[in-house]
Length: 260
Image 1 (tube, rainbow, N blue to C red):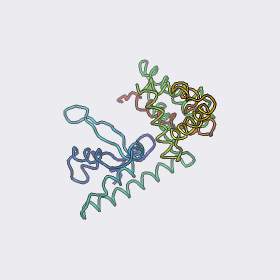
Image 2 (image 1 turned 180 degrees about the vertical axis):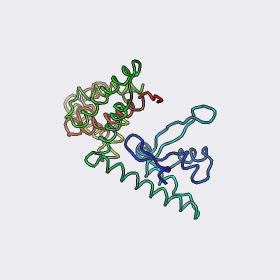
Image 3 (image 1 turned 60 degrees about the vertical axis):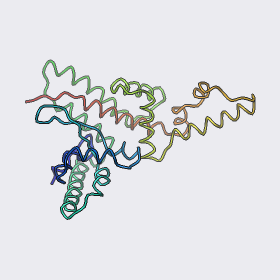
Image 4 (image 1 turned 90 degrees about the vertical axis):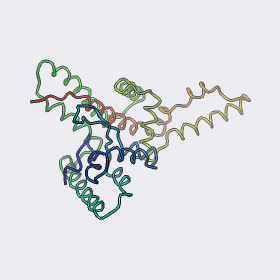
């Protein structure tokens, strides 16, 4: 039963390959079903993650990892006595592994478990001359990220964290902010872009009343930005913790795997 689920970056998940095998479906059909789900962007971002596996021919092929909620959303339409039994087996497997994970780290939040597991991966590796340099560099970065989970951030450090995440992922800065904003809204009900929009409208209305015309768009953006809004509303720490966790996952995924 436990083979139905596994731990990935501190969360209990399953994947499209296992679902296809368990429910007797073609993997390509399961991938299509997931990509055609009518869920929100926030739900998809929080519960489904593109991944890959190596097939028998040695080729990298796509698969999708999913949380318990993602799995539940996907298989709601799968019917029949056998499908119902498989759903029960999955629920039991999720519960069992989540209990085991939580019992191992009873005082940690999920984000802290992510960073802790990443650190463990570094510490477990046996060293030789080549791997030592790579692992020590990653270990140093992950330790810093772990400390960031409990440290009170300032705006400059958060900007540095965004820049580092951009270097690791090659993702544009706007997309990084929007990705974290989506998670903040999903997890905490905080809508940063809406707050920024409302504050810009107020600033512009005051400018129109005083000068008879609005600010240029570039000027308005410089006067009201997401970082400043989060600082004023006490949201910067939540942004920093989420981003630090995402970066810890990227660095953990980059750890070299050695045999023997």
